[in-house]
Image 1 (cartoon, one colour):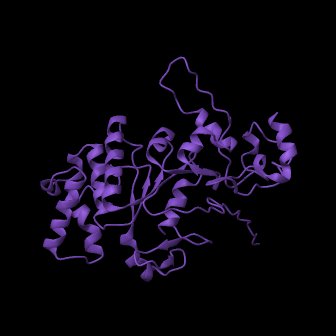
Image 2 (image 1 turned 120 degrees about the horizontal axis):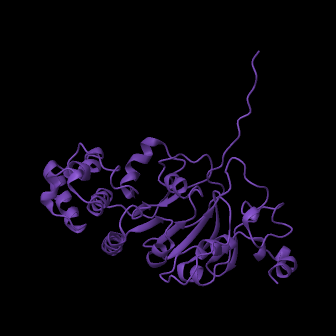
Image 3 (image 1 turned 90 degrees about the horizontal axis):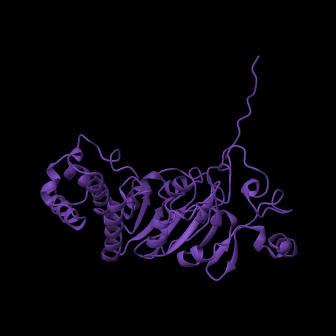
Length: 319
């Protein structure tokens, strides 16, 4: 006898909408499991989104939906969008020289002669702070910071307009982090790059990003300019994240305002997914999922505290 098994649907990313302007750095933050990396990979079509659109404006001004084009149509677009990975130790092939690693995208896309590729590799190695002669060495001969520079060189050798940096400095020492961040900022100015910067270190995000999108359980719960978000967070989850940022003062105790774990995407709570952990939870939160709504010029939050329909109840709750 055959039994039909019910398979639940897990929405790792659900109804995520944001824009990314040319030359901008947008930080994507949240706890582990919030959907940051999945979102980044869907944008680059490393993962195929099950629904929605990823609109990419090309240099000629035309817009293409990356989520809808075929693999053949996607290939000529890939040079314009590249990724810098988190782990500089596992993202580089140990059997390939630095020159082979950095030139591989050029070979795949058939760009330039062998001599032209060698010159391009030497040039980009200089720009990331390495020497052209380093192209003959293997990754094991370099430190973590140097390996990440190799990863950056591999991404930029194609001269992209969009770079997704997925926790690009989280595996590095603090002093090396600062060097790599300064390098990324300098390269952004030189090549007019646009960054999607996936991170969990809010202190890094504060100093590096123009705007910040906060994710929880696969959805964006707040989107705002960096200064405004850190000065006046409008979503309780954002406030909880900021409360956990350590201060360089032993007398200041850390206090995370949202106890518990990130909601399980296979068993999300009804209504607002954050409501079981939220200190401001009130009547509509367990029943109605809040939309991401504009709360101020350039700012949005998905919270019933900012919903005019529940204004009176929200005011009473805050008091």
